[in-house]
Length: 136
Image: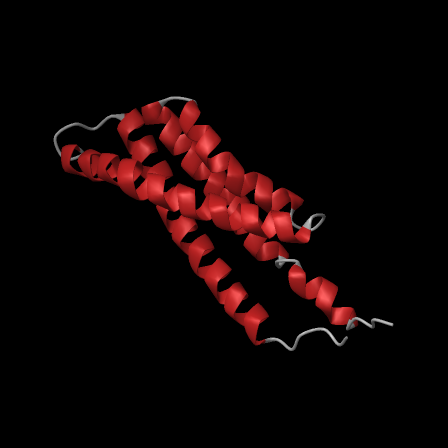
């Protein structure tokens, strides 16, 4: 007979705040990236958003999809979006355009939210590893 600790099922579900930060980071990065690189960039962020949405229902696959989405999105944002943002910052004093300012704000928010999401996922993983395992 297997008895499971009642808190073990809730331990597998990420807290709501982490899932909302993941959804916000994916949406902001998708919008900011699609402004420069087209709508296909939004597909890159869809793994993080989809993982955050399905994680309470499919614990393991949602968690892995969130981790994979966060890794891929961090890679793409760091490789493609951050240099574009730095270029927009450099041209801002000479060229005041509302589109450039909107892109700058969206990319800055996506970078901040994505960093917050990455740190929150790592902290939550550390907490889950230190928690006692279910009783068998």
